[in-house]
Amino acid sequence: MSKKGTCLQSYIPIRSSASSASEMVSSLIFGESYTVLDSEKGFLKIVNDFDQYEGWISENSYSEYTVYDSLNEFAFLEAKGDHHILFIPCGAHIPSEGNMSIGGVSFSIDRKLKTYHHLPLSIRIQKLACSFVNMPYLWGGRTFMGIDCSGFMQVVFKACGFTLPRDTSKQIESGERVNIKDAKACDLVFFSNIDSDKVSHVGLMLDKSKIVHASGKVRIDDFKPEGIMQNGKLIYKTASIRRIL
Image (tube, rainbow, N blue to C red; front, side):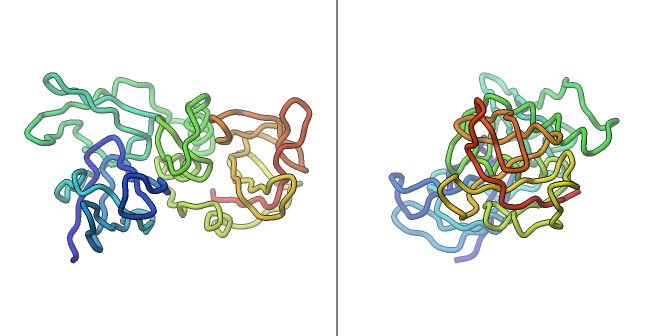
């Protein structure tokens, strides 16, 4: 089996196996295309064309392949139709003209928001990342409705024109390594838990003393060379710093 589809919902959970009870390991976001590899028990095994992440989605969520030519650079947008509303997450592929038809319903995207195109790229990335603050943590999530640490970094950079792998273990291979003394805003900082040396967490440096990351929720915490601090206590240990820009 080999056919393509496009996510035309706010997001579609990608699961570890062909069951609605299985773990959500990632998600497709609006406008992302995928290739169908197999089918089983009402589920489709797919690979996300953007980041090559594989998993299972419900067959009921399948939509025909559609290509949009722009990216959403806001935490979310609203698309409105007659008696319909669709929330479109950051990093979604959308039509540049702002109009589209889904399931026979015509939608218009409300884009009356302040853009940051006039600002330097590093400032744009920081402002976008900070617009996620207080949004909930969700393992496998990549949207404002729930997001994990690596999904957060991936969609923020995607919206600004950069491609990062889906998982922390792969993101740590991106860009170039920098020393802590040379670290600056927009560098990715990778961490391990206090009682482990395995890298399991990532955040975006805002300056030499602050970091934005998804842990429980998207939050801004104090950052020191040794790691992330909360209420004066070390909660993650610094493992590596990578520069993407």
